[in-house]
Amino acid sequence: MGTPEQSTVGGPAASWAGRVGGLAGSCHPGPVAAVTALMTALAVTAGQGAARCVLTAAAVLTGQLSVGWCNDAYDARRDITAGRRGKPVVDGTVGVTEVWMAAYGALALCVPLSFACGLWAGAVHLTGVAAAWAYDLWLKATAWSWAPYAVGFAALPAFVALGLPGQPWPAWWVVTAGALLGVGAHLGDVLPDIHGDLATGVRGWPHRLGPDGARLLLPVPLVAASAVLALGPAGPPGRWGIAALAVAGLVAVAGTVLGRRWERAAFAAAVAVAVVDVALLLLRGTGIA
Image: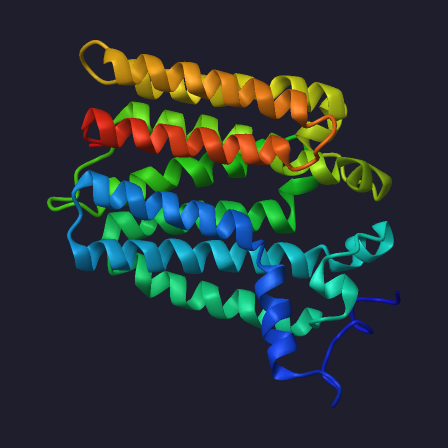
């Protein structure tokens, strides 16, 4: 399969549409779409105006795109060594240089879009994006690999709250729940590739737990996040809070069980729990600030 440089698509046989498709596939489109959609829904639920919701969505989208492209570009050599077919850079659909250019371009757009939502909002969001880049470039292979996920996911609801009129600080429980969801997303995201990562020397936190340990631990932060959202706001959790907590528990456990046969089930469970949590905020009408 050659080196990442040899995989660069730039010859006459490479079509423009093919390269665009390769870039789309290398940005981790599933997580990008899921995070952007959830934060847009949270912005609407929190009471941001239409224009601000569009800005929030654009900032989150460009930030997530930059992180996804950075991840694929930086990991290209390792992915080729591990023989991870299905990744555009590995398959030669798009070149490493093109993916790096896309990552930096998305990051350049993310900065002004984030600050357009407010100084504090922009600073918080860009801190989360910087943490994600730090994961891609360094922390992924360390025992601290969970920290960028916790910071990045905690920054997202804080970004939405600080984008509201008056720039209110986010409630402690929504930031805590975001951090816990981030830890769960990290466990779920690593599991499908954990054997290949171990073979190429990656020793992040989930890798040190081992495939079975990471899979068994997965429900803990996911259910804890839902519990914080259900019990953190003032007043009783109500029927919606109890229902959301029960559903989150079932989904998280199902992701762990199904993850033994279907590799993507663990991450799908993390996304599903996040959807349940956003729905809980919508149904209960609990402000995030």
